[in-house]
Length: 334
Image (cartoon, rainbow, N blue to C red; front, side, top):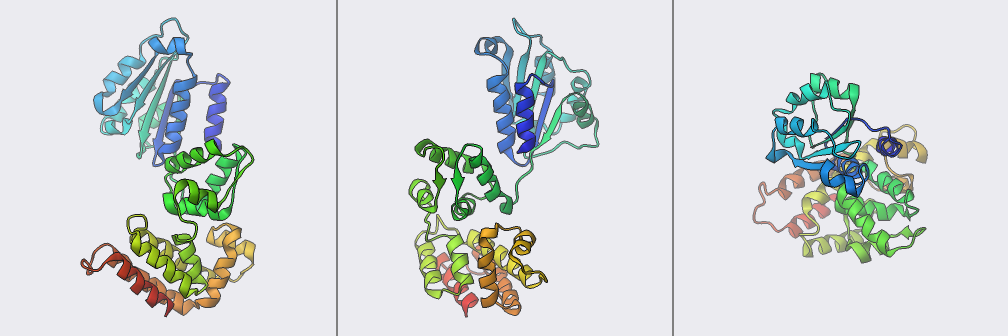
């Protein structure tokens, strides 16, 4: 995020490079940088003759070079943006001839999503000398809640830990989806507001009481009644609560619990750091560790592996998801 901010600041200050090669597994930041250049580098009057958007599936590397070598009309610069450039992955290295001697009046933006160019090869080295090669890395799930907090903080909003966890659980690590939902909330909420579980439930449609986050907590507390209520809700709403997601989250939780049992230093700060969780949630792990000794945690992990296979249809084609969830919960809590 900080690198993206610096890129934007540099462009605003006129420190513009002739080539921006934006690559990596996380498309959100690639789109952010590309869109910023598309909207802000040229005036509306200049864009008509001096800004072109190409799509990788429709063009060749020669087409990119031909457009990049054009001189601007009645403007200091022209902008050439190549979207979905990953469709040119087989021939992308052929761009090296242009990268070694780019036209300084052209700003060439390459959106190369979900892939990377080889940093050992000539293209990367040539672009890195004259332009910017930005790699947009996918965030791990345990990093997304902090990303949400920082994103909202930059716009003068806050969010409760539980609310951010609900978003991560429901939307995963897809930053574009998460940002879309956050923007919807910002439209209806004044600056300075805190996003709460109630607001998330009301405006995004995620249940604040019946979700994987609450199931994990109920199991950790050995609250059989609450856990069964949530499982029954999942059984009635299987499309919104796929079993494979539930099993994955519980597997992650019990793997962390196994790690907790192995820690010598069980102070809250060290636990948060070692397990890579928000300090707000450390007490949940302490409680769960009391209720699930190390031997039982190992057994639960084996149970979850068994039901992970079953949730994918292996050996349980005719068994409804709800029944599998109930059986799994029984084995965990027994």
